[in-house]
Length: 460
Length: 123
Image (cartoon, rainbow over all chains, first blue to last red; front, side, top):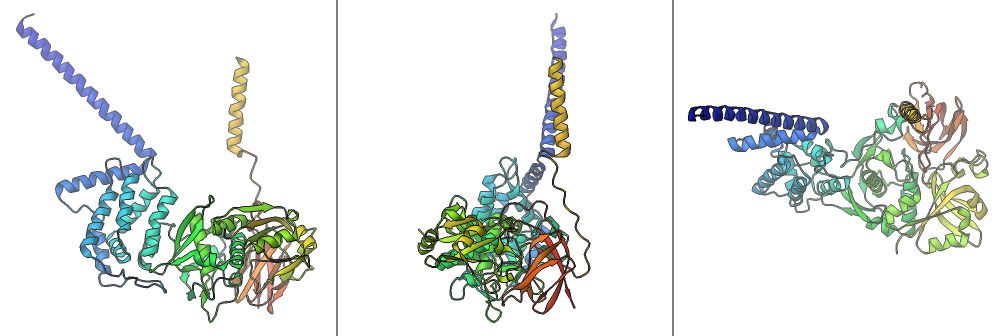
């Protein structure tokens, strides 16, 4: 083999190797493309994140405006210039109605940077960065920041929070912490705007009454509307007489609230904090007894005539002024659970524990004597009850009993009094004492008339 | 080997049947929702509903009727069992029970029964 031949062979070999490399590279590119394609099919949100990342990168290189939907931002900002954000009726300025424009601009930039994510989309850490941006702001600054965000940006943020991708998205508890910042600080306008993109600020009620109610035009699920009632949070503290159940299947929660309000009204009062923006932060407890904070706005689900659709004040409101604490607690529970329909069906042991953070004890009625029941009440405890599932053979459920004194099946009650000497137990229907006065039964009647007794300490 | 194929076939058939009919048997058949007259107001079992200045609640709902009670919200409740197409007087208003629907799967929790009763307030 001469040098020329050798060169030629080497050249051909190099061509073949070049050809082989090209084939390999093309193969790898195709494989990667197929892999990315498959990922996009399985996890569509990754595509959005990749596209956003690419757009941001290109925009940074070209020096353009890197905010997505910037046109609509400018439009919204100009619309909001000089306007006073809406407030809830009982909101105070709280010293937060001043903003530093430079600080807010930097916050907007930091937020957009966080939500732009990286090559692999918006990860949990990016969402935490975004939360920290919000946490550093006062109410008016949050309002100013959100006013500069487009609807597309807010919608995308919510999508990112709800993303189920392996390293993206947040769980409900993490999202709650973020929404708490908005709910406890921002103006009504800001909260209303955010609530267009998530149900985690205002619990939805369009599933109340079950599937069978969905198509009925008279169902509160269809006729209800959020609106603000003239109100005080408390009038002379919390009392069971402030409460009557409305058109939602949460008798177990209503009975629990009434029982705790009787046992220790201060527990109810201490559970609710008024925020400067007019919202209420409620301390509930999860199933492990850990406190959870849930902030609700003071607007409630109303009937077309402006009365509360769900829990009401037992006809006790003075001059049309509602005592809002029962509505606040009911709405907070719905938000904690997810939506109003999620609190339909339950038992008072869950409700009592959610209010007190203390475990409940469930027993058959005959297990506890009248003296035992009296001791629970004397110890500052609360007693919830579950009525029979079938009252056919119990005279206390019979149609011959006057309506206001008749027991109802599948319903929650609570014990308001026990007279050991007389051998009687007084029970209360959560539909409200004005219409259904407390009912005093003999101890034997009591034992025969209920399915479960649920006792709970209220304070340690 | 034939036995193994027989087992495999049986398992496949079982999975197919379960997938098409639903594991654990079929869902309880829901009774048909009634056709309602104009103005009928829906009451869900044990849930006090406010309308036309009244607070009204239906309980013990079954196919033949319901226990309807209520008041103006500030006075003691009145009412009684009503058959479908029967009436009850509440606060001098006449309510006619026009239909009921029984929840086929009411669940166990207090307040979980979503049975319905529809009433019309007569002029």
